[in-house]
Image 1 (cartoon, one colour):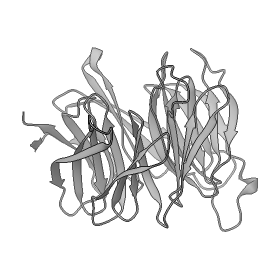
Image 2 (cartoon, rainbow, N blue to C red):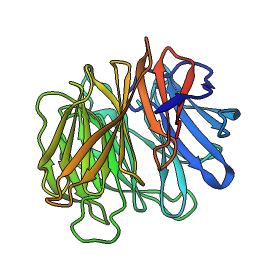
Image 3 (tube, helix red, strand yellow):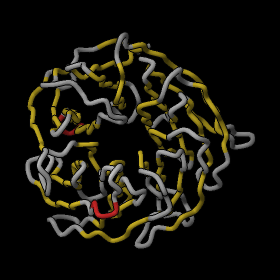
Length: 335
């Protein structure tokens, strides 16, 4: 069971975007950072365990060429082996900051020349894999940036071009030095999933076709892909083969966010039906297939949820954001 904790106030509501919450825990300082997008700005908040807000910072999308301020599409902390970067995507480009948002270390402008008159350029989908940061774009390309141990000498090292529709989300997990291990998954608005092995040259391992609905959020855990779809389903696939293991009719409306607590294999799903569910994933010792157990369901009444994240790797607390709700709602385990 989970109980509602003290909420963290926002200066404005979260925008109605999928995956509109990022969380970075700093155990050494007993702090948790939260990032939320609203229009042309993003709010960064630091909070103590009791939910007391200690600091706030507002970041704005770099203007670039254009008359109107660009809208931010996502904010996400990328934890690399040697540094943490805060990455912000918008309709104009990609901004990378030091983890507290104090210094912008890199700016990549989007080339909107390929965008049609009826299609807006934007970047969306952010994840770190090894010393690379992957960012998706409206064209279906995934931009791979090589990140140095320090400083601003970030290089666009590769462009992955296997998707034909806009990237919706990207997930990664450490490959732990094994060969032929799937450690990166990219998802798009058609529901197509591409599974990659990261490295100096990313290698496509398999493709999992869509079935007519967008894949809005994706996670990767111990070789298992968890994908959330616009019809409310969560599907679990074997990353190396693309075989579907489990199909869960988890929600009545479109899923807006998935998250994983890697230490315990808990999966968090949130959707536009106002519900947040927590599932326990495990592998059967007999055949190695994924098994799923429902652990908890939480209704956030009269709220269009748009972001949800665990606040610790053990899955004992989580936070959610909702459209037209000027606070981050927090829940923690009663055990």
